[in-house]
Structures are given as structure tokens and as C-alpha cells.
Image (tube, rainbow over all chains, first blue to last red; front, side, top):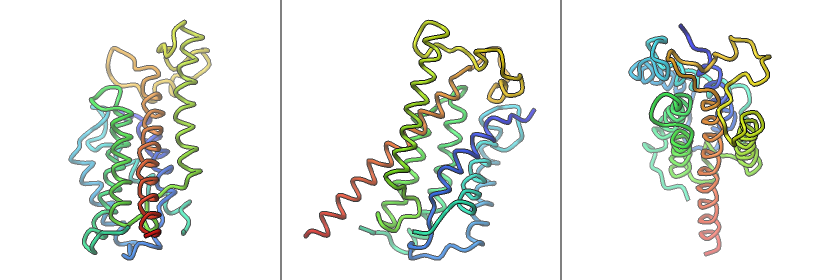
Length: 82
Length: 158
């Protein structure tokens, strides 16, 4: 059974942090492809973590993946430049 | 204050994001596994600290304003106190675990949103973990942001 709690709160906490990401003064260019690579790496990490925190869930860590999605959505929707 | 080379600058933002996700995951599993609000909050803060150390205080991609940190820390502290007071008024003791449906008005689907397949019930512990995690992450991040700002001020004064 899929637990909705880690997904909901993971996205909320990810949105809180992702909304503050600002990429315009880094000195390094992070393109869309960079974030796709980060997403793929995150999916691999989530898969290796297993069904954490609830042990009868999907075979990936839903909390980790929803936090990652929350960070990206927050960066896309709410992040502003410096 | 930026000390990072190009390789560090390329690799530290992805590592910071992964660290933050691990911290959020630790917070959300704190009521049934080792870890919890403090540990998860410290992991989130470590991602932000890594980013500040590599990119410098003015250029970091993960840098929070004074107001934002203040709001997050206040929400964490207020949430903790309010949950404790609910336990005091309903159960008679501060932070008494009153469960997720004090007034018998919350539907079962929302009550069970953070339940896990076990005979025991975590009650308010996951929500306490979330508030503690917010407070710890905001507190540790603000300490490092302040230290980095002081160092920058000293360097500019010399």
C-alpha cells in the first residue's frame, strides 16, 4: 500500500528549500540537462535506499524522491534571481 | 570568501541537493527508524553549509535571507509548543501523545497518512519530527550564514 504521508510532506519540505535556489551568481552554468542528470542520480539513490521509510511501499524511497521533485518544482515555480 | 575550484563548484550543488533529500527522508522516517527531526535537520543544514563553503556567502545557490530563516525557525518552534500544549490540555501532560484525531472530526484517510504497518501508533511523533527538523535546519543554517557573513566583513575591513 502506498503511504501518502512521506510524499506529501516530502514535497512540502522540498518546496520550502527549492524555492530559495538561485543559480545566477555561481560562476558555473547549470543547464536543464544538469538537472536531468541530478534527477537520474536521485532516482538511482532512491532505488538503492529501498522502500524507506515505510517498508511495504514501492521499491524506491518515496520520501527521497518526493523531496527531490519538491526541490525541482520549487526551483522552477518560486525561485527568483538574486 | 569563495574558495572552491571549478570541479568543486560543479559537483557540490548536486551533492547538496542529494544531502537535503536524504535529510528530508530521515525526518519523515524518524518515528520508526533511527534518526528523526534533529538528525534530518542537521543533514539538510550540512547540504546548505557545503554549498556556502564552496560558492561563498554572496554567491551560494542555497542561501536563505534573514526573514526566511526567521519564519522557518518560528514555525518550527511554534508548532512544537502548540503540539505540546494540545497534549497538556487534552491528556493532562505536556507533549502527551494524543494521536491524530483529538476532536473526532478528522477522516480516517487523513489520520492514517503517516501510519505504518505495526500494532503501535506513532500519533503526533511524525509531526513533532517535522517541526523539530524545520527548527534545527533553520538554526544551523543561520549560524553558518552568520559566521560566513562575519568573516566576509572582517576580510573587507582588512
